[in-house]
Length: 171
Image (cartoon, rainbow, N blue to C red; front, top):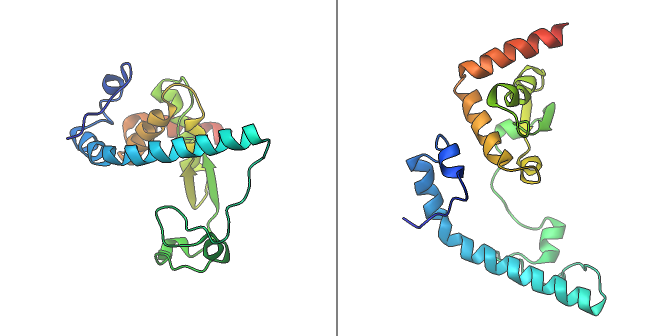
């Protein structure tokens, strides 16, 4: 198993998320981080070169093959490639809400209210926006994961929050 680095007290604060199975999965993915770091380094180098030369961002050459694929930029732009079939559940239009699954710096009984609002909204689906969490404070992305896990388990803390939220919505 690859060595994983957990900063500060995150491993103990979120040991309910970093289960042995989760750590095993992360360890299996860890070798891919070298490629990610190399690609990010190349990207930063290109940005620095453009900046020094006084150039802004530019579109890729249409003949360029997209890294990690056999698809040219022109083919991608034209939709000239075959992907996986779209699952039946995604074939129809949904009334969908979006947003984070956690409230920053809040204890779980307050933080989980975001999930309760989503589940009581009447929407067909709810997409919990991880990108919202990544730009936020401290470990909000982990709080998002925890709240979704708690909700899927129908934990008592969610049920109490949903009861409160429902009562507020009905006022």
